[in-house]
Length: 521
Image (cartoon, rainbow, N blue to C red; front, side, top):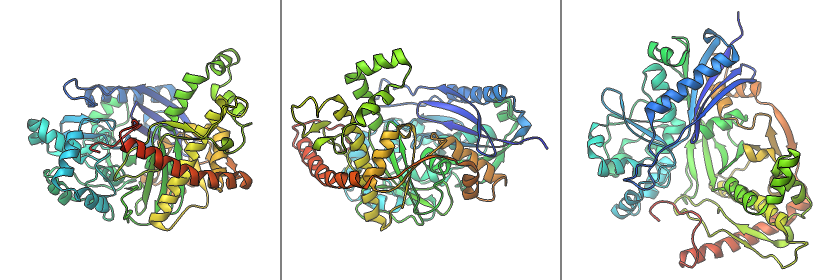
């Protein structure tokens, strides 16, 4: 019998890619194409999704990764899909796409305001059932379509997400799965099914919700059109995947309740697995269905840590960038080497960028550095740089405390993945702040691996999702906490929370500009 392979197709915010894996988790090929979500000039903040062009890009990725790896289409045992969350596609009665927007779409401020004015307590009511607020969910966007494009709204027969759209293009089968579907805000978390009563309460139709199929299920084979478009073999099993963060947690081995993972990139996510879909009474933190049936996730989001790092690098570290160009060293490695010499706590200096999540009233202070002295030896650009690293780790601690307050549970260790985990200094600071081991996997960009694990589970290569993760996830390094540094950070954290609250008061008084505020606030 010839060797078998598993394919993941990943529709991300900025690109689509097709990735091939061996069944032991070894990645053998990846082809990626960037895509853009264009703003409709009539609607500021809009980000339309071009389903015709983007499907062509996805098909090109699939064809090219098959060709580049030399894998025969009949050797691909199964395909699964994953995607950015919150992006939605609307279909007509014939199953044709008629409207779509990406997850970064921000055109529905007016509709959020309308929902709040209509019934101020409704957002909390929806959150307690669905785990979502208006900030990221589909409800305001659907209301926008109803108000601004009534002809499209009337033609709408079904709503879906982008991973389901990929499956529909491959198989002709239309369904939705709980991990991404739950991010719409129209799901009952505990039943992992649509709750049409939520749509009715918001003045929306209740007849546009397709069937729900659980993650890891073989939904259908690749049909003749899907095979012609992509080069896949007709009849190849297609397995239901899930949202990018949920599949990322599978791809780093966090498949069981009470496990936790941190994904560090432009935004940071703290994901904590739970055994039920109970939400936070204070509505402070997002709760989603995991892509593992019978498991849910508390998700706390930190805004823009990776973007803050890029800003600081480009604005203040030109010398290090020049050194990088001459030596070939990574500019962040150069900066980390200098910042490592700064003592934990940065001599008492701290900064305010993203805040600990408050999902029901989500806003951030104006970006701020504070509590430094006019001493260039202690307070140079590397002190400020290290303060950014520490600030993000303090945020993770805040999110861990927040989830502990809501659930009564906390992990014994944390898995750290994503681009930020390449930094040994950031990984060590995270371990020191949390006071617990931080494990870094070999595959840091784990979303596609999570999709491959689901594909293998769906066709019986792995007995369970957990077993698939055990067979494929490998560890690079574990960072043990320095408990002396931990004591420093424990004190700093208490001060930082108070300083941040004071900075947020300045925003609320109109004296400074918020770094980000949720729609409608």
